Length: 78
Image (tube, rainbow, N blue to C red; front, side, top):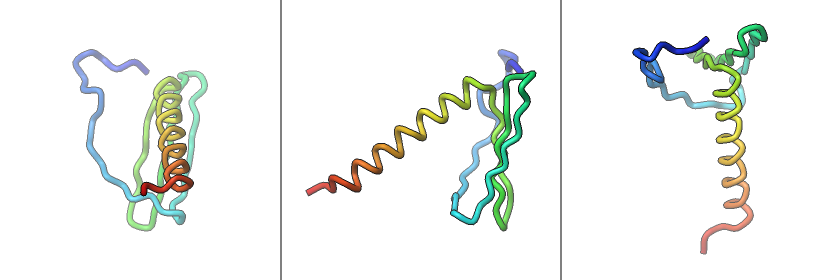
């Protein structure tokens, strides 16, 4: 699912507060090397559409953020 050059790289800006009660619902499309991940909450749903490379990039960013938060928890600023 390649993006035509004239489409923007993102199509909307959304803020979502992700709580532990939200359901994560993945759906894969192996033939297209893409997937969707829906965040379903009590007041709405947000679905991320991405190709495999975009998902890997998001995974790496999230892993880095978690590592930074873990480091900050174990080494609070003076």
